[in-house]
Amino acid sequence: MLLHFTKMHGLGNDFMVVDLVTQRARLEEAQIRRLADRRFGIGFDQLLVVEPPRDPDMDFRYRIFNADGSEVENCGNGARCFARFVRDQRLTHKHEIRVETAGGPLTLRVEDDGQVRVDMGVPRFAPEALPFDAAEDRLRHALEVAGERLEIGVASLGNPHAVLRVEDVDTAPVARLGPAIEAHPRFPRRVNAGFMQVVSPHEIRLRVYERGSGETLACGTGACAAVACGIRQGLLESPVTVHLPGGDLRIEWAGDDAHLTMTGPAVRVFDGRVALG
Ligand SMILES: N[C@H](CCC[C@H](N)C(=O)O)C(=O)O
View: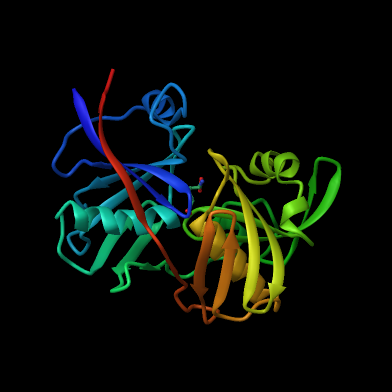
C-alpha cells in the first residue's frame, strides 16, 4: 500500500504529515522509527497524523509521534503545520480550526500574513501535571543531574518540559545534560529539556533537547514552557520573542489562568508517497 504524505517544517523542526481522514493506514511504532530515519527512511523529528475528531465540537483529532515512535500529547510547531496542511488539502475551509490532542484542545488560527497563531491553553506547573516527582509546585526545583545540582523550572503544555536557565545557549551543555535530564528518574514519562538564555524581559534564546527526538532546530511547546517559567520567575514579561536555532516565535501569556498563545510560520516542503512494508 502506498501512503501519501507531506513533508513540512516549523522553523526547521520537521514533520511527516499524514491525512488519515481520506486515507486508511495503521502505523506501528517500529514502522514510525524506520520512516523517521534520515537515511533509511523519510526522516523527520515528528510524525503528525490528521484524523476525524472523536469530540463533535472539534474539527480534527491531531496525533503526534516522536522519531522514536512514542506517541505524545502535543507539538507546537506541528500544530501550525497541521493548520496549513488541512487547509491546503481542503479538508477544511475554516480559518480557525479546533483540534483535539492527547494533551487537550488547541485552537489554530491561520493569519492573513500566513503565520499561524495557536491557543495552547493554560500552562500548568503542578508536578503531577508533567508528571514530575516533587512534593509541591515551586518556581524552581533542585535536580541532581550527572553529578551537578541544577535549578529547573517545570511546565506542562500537555507535554512535559524542564527549563534550565543558562548564561549562553551557544556554550550550554545540551549534548551532555539534555539526554540526562530527558531520562531523569524523577520524570516517569521522560521530559523535554530546554536551555534558556534571557536576553531581555521580552527576548530569550532557547535550545531544546526534545524527548524522543534529541535536539531539534526548534520546539514550539518548549518555547511556550520556557516563557511561562520565565514569566512566573519574574524574568520575563509578555510578549516574548523566542530565538531558536531555526528561527523566531512570538509567545504571549498574561499569567495565571490565561491562555498562552504562540505565533510563527509553517512551511510545506514536498509531497510524497511511501510503501508501507
Ligand atoms: N518531543 C516532544 C513532542 C514534540 C514537541 C515539539 N516538536 C514542539 O514543537 O512542541 C515531546 O515528546 O513531548
